[in-house]
Image 1: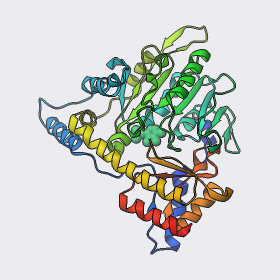
Image 2 (image 1 turned 30 degrees about the vertical axis):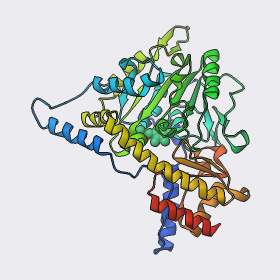
Image 3 (image 1 turned 180 degrees about the horizontal axis):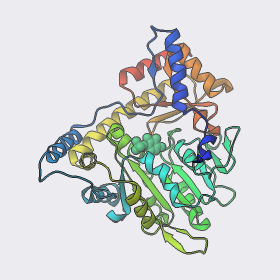
Image 4 (image 1 turned 90 degrees about the vertical axis):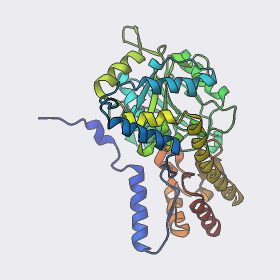
Length: 408
Ligand SMILES: *Cc1c(COP(=O)(O)O)cnc(C)c1O
């Protein structure tokens, strides 16, 4: 008899966006003529830039020739891309990495979920709350999160980020083995300053804590003082693994490419106290379980670093950040408390009058025909907030704001 991994059964049935879709569909059935605008799901909408599609066309043509055909590539990614990453994403910020510390993947979601395989099941974990659900759910599946009780996992340390602490999480009051941080943050759209990030690195150095740092939105940072990488902080290479993605940077949600940085210095301990380099473990893991990202996707990613590519993706990001500005301006003028949206494509709005996230979601859907994401879906501290995304087109965004203005 094959016994199932019962940890899976602890996960709540529905994925947040499935719940949202269900409610939106129910509304559409009862209001067949309503024109619904979604500022909900965090997917990009602008097309790939020409530098990227030209590189993809070239790669496809190469694959059609005997000399240019590529079969399995290196599990760690092609050297051309790993070198371009080191040279463009890190060197200009004074961070020296070796290409062997870069692992190209098919997007950051897989690796942010898989990375926890490198550490024992009985480590303790901490997350800022609210948070991208992948971090906790992937730990639930392996039995590390404990049991769910009133929206909280028993073995997870939640570090609340709310208006009360201005979205600056406090260091845990106890030792935690592993901390997940995501900056710029999904869902709150808030960022972390260098001084605050330094506190986390120092905490990790002092407590022998491992930090999993998700930098998927670093390309949206506008303020020159905000760190793009945790390795901008001294000592971080000893304690942090960092995740990047071309999904939000260059619209690759349908292309699939990202990378994980596992510095040679970052180690974890065996029970006997021997230090093991995670770079070596991750390499072993990837060689066994991953067969590389497609050559075409990696050539596409490489093209984001050409001068044309850089300029074109900057333009798309500016387009989305225009939406963010429009949303911030309108919602603030309506007297709402609005966070994020200055260095990230997400706006986090405090629901007025102490209403719950889901109630406000339904009111906005029925009265303004605009879809948002209920904050509580991202963790207990998200209750009383909603998330709006800047990934739509200008016209829809402006129209959605006009409707919300009329409604409120
Ligand atoms: C979108 C997103 C990612 C990137 O996912 P991909 O698998 O690379 O498309 C990673 N982390 C967070 C927090 C995200 O919102």
